[in-house]
Length: 135
Image 1 (tube, one colour):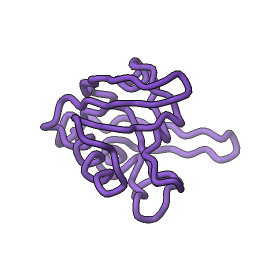
Image 2 (cartoon, rainbow, N blue to C red):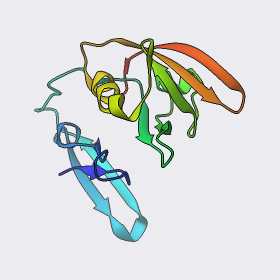
Image 3 (cartoon, one colour):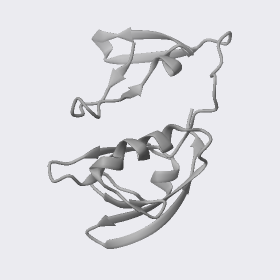
Image 4 (tube, one colour):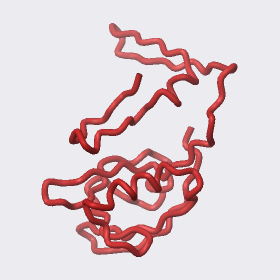
């Protein structure tokens, strides 16, 4: 079971996947609009789940845009905002062709830091983000 974000089919990726959900017993109380996760002490993550806390997507204009930022994450602490445009990463121009490669780097625990060049209404800035454990 996975919970997917509303992304175009080619970029649709699990926001909460089996690797995380299997760590918990989930109780959903529909009348109260509540969902509780109770940790399962017998199951542990296979990896350390390092993350930038950043979700990217391709716009209709073929721009790589920030679609989500996890509160308290490295991306949040760097003041990256939803709607910011990623124009480069690790000194490479961000293009639709290399978006999947960037997303794979973001999910790869062996890649600890990623340099991003971000553009928004306040201008362009370069950032070096170090992944952190978010769970």
